[in-house]
Length: 365
Image 1 (tube, rainbow, N blue to C red):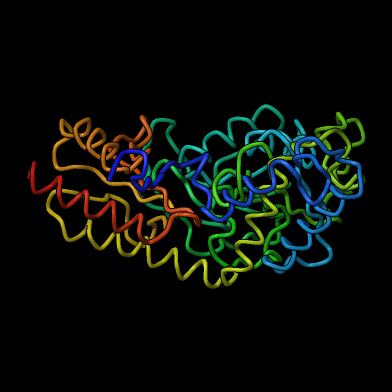
Image 2: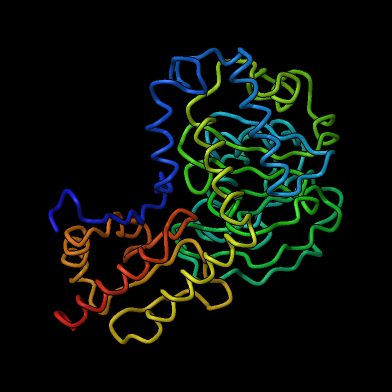
């Protein structure tokens, strides 16, 4: 097999791989999208054809996630990082309090940004350089109605640590960063007041962020916010107040159709459980590789692992690249390796990775 025909498996944490059928649809649509004679990037975002796409995308999100009618579905720019600012700006103040649960890199980033706008406190003390291997023990009795909201991150991509249940919120509005695992399993949207996820993991490509937010929550926002930092702007104008990122919106639509047509979230969860279990089982059976995350906190979408000797890391990465195993290197803050098993990663990709790991262990073990 030549390099040009070798099957490539992209384990990148984001931007992540897309399903082959979605990539082919993009190619087919490029010269003439929906009979417009143009690509989706060239049509008016206010024209009827794109407005149909807007409506279809919201309908798909509502159907797949069973989003109740009292929630808005918004499309915002700026990724999850912009949400770190928008949440406290809209729903707290310099004299207000917000509670944050921190168990990894993105939770640390979220609370640091929130502290610019309100009194954002960690539910559990943390250290900036701490590398988490589990969900810390916590006491929700600290959370009462004096707090404007409670925020947590469902899956920490760097460390490979994921919540497997929904924490109690004691009646306080609950906000959640689901960037890396929204659409990987069924969720109960009604347990949350605000959910956000940037698209480049399981919803398409970078450039657009989904926000699912209770309509009544938006009534609490102050009236002096910049328009593009006010959730009500997106709600009132169908997220079309300014020219939006039309191409990422279109790709999201294709991804949502792919999820629906391949069985919905129950089927997605079954496939993701099979992929992660297979890789964890191999790692646990090896004396050459190890995963240090507590079993009940292990991420099903970001599997981290270390080699027996750190000096072999560069050789492992170089060999993986030649074998068609791409972007397997762990984040520099954590080290080791990271296999991101988002929805588009087929079980064949996990099989290929395990076979390479076996071969490498045989040669270097």
